[in-house]
Image (cartoon, rainbow, N blue to C red; front, top):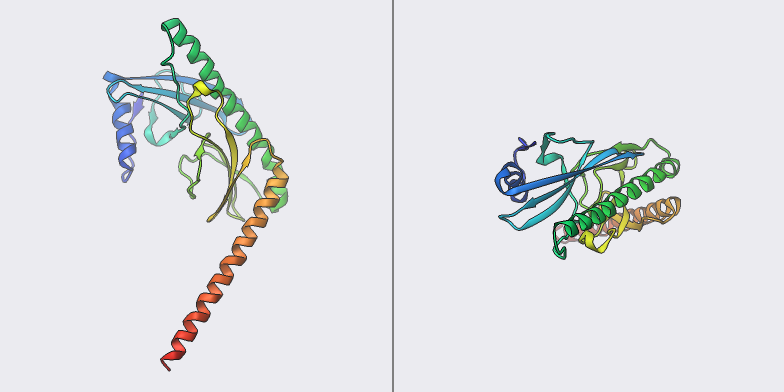
Length: 234
């Protein structure tokens, strides 16, 4: 069972999603449970089709959700890696394509979670603090790529966030291109999923330090400009 998210102030897109999930007359949802994940433990993929809107979209929710489980719209992470069954000749062919494409997404989720777990130790060592696992759907920073899992590593002392991301594509094209996003305030970089975590963290910290230096220089320049302007009125 899918229920409405009671929180106010959601966007019109979320409103449309809630309406779609609540109206069972023209929609079908198929779930795929993915377990045994080192960080996420388990997630549920929900393929949601809407005949009247002509949409077939993919969502990922934390936890193992069985048949009849209640999932609020606010618990769903939109992952733009959707099924494409249009080339199926008949129902049997559609089932074959579904299995292939759902398997590709499952493998992508497992791979991303395993890689994120590998990042946890070097991230803590290089930052010199605790690293926590966060399962929020909404993050404190806006990423330039789509999230793949509702799981992120958070280093509270340095305000750094690490999470898997992907490119939008249909699952008929196979596994989506994936990466690891590192974010700290207004500094964001995306690294290849297979890249060395220690090298990536060191590169990101260097980029963040350079950004901080450049920002400090701009502020000093602005302050000097203001001072000179005020001197004109003296």
